[in-house]
Length: 269
Image (cartoon, rainbow, N blue to C red; front, side, top):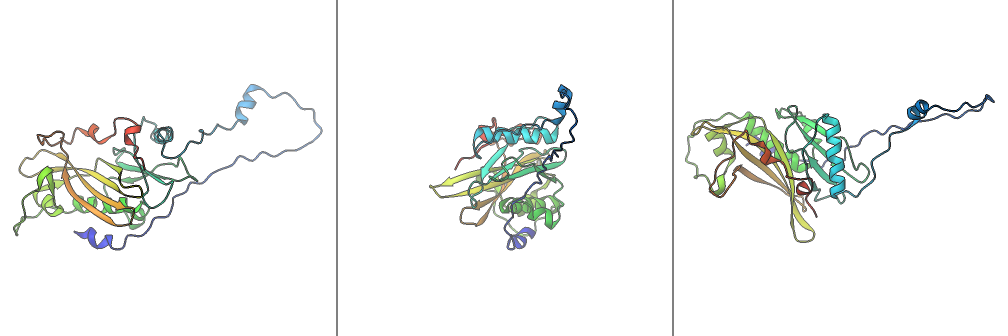
């Protein structure tokens, strides 16, 4: 796969910041009599109150992030997937579970920027290197692999491959050889703790996949894990299933991709 060579050169990501503007009011004294200000004048001179400061990683803060995205979209945003950065304390990665207006949406929150504006990237996955390195490292790896799946075309199998593994898992080579991918419809981040100080942040990108044998688009996920030790591990391609019987999820059933509540999408340390 093309992404494997690229991943060798993954670089650390700097924190993204937002410009903050300040309203400056000049004071003067000209001896003129002061007239009472009207309610209209008072309303024009007011500064909109800022949302209360709440600790990162709490449900109240997660609601603020959802409201932030709702304001940007001018449309009600669903509950978000939110997880801590395994390498930076008090830093959180936030993603919208579903693509919106043909873009994937994400934000990187820090104590200095607790409710940042969301960034977005086209779901075509035809991104520049500069766009990719703006993402946190595990997200860089996940979208790079997804881009490889999306832009590679299937080819006839000329060598023997092992059968598909249980639970609908397969290698990228198998997935590309046995079907065709479309633009991603969503992504998620989930923190999997292992002990008190170790763990892995899993980033998954969900793409429609049309198997040649069935011809019906279903949902698959491609993931990348980022451990607290700094290593990156791929999870391969998984066919999304709804029950123990192994029924694949049709591409139209995207509600399965979003958390049922704000609290459900928030991964704790």
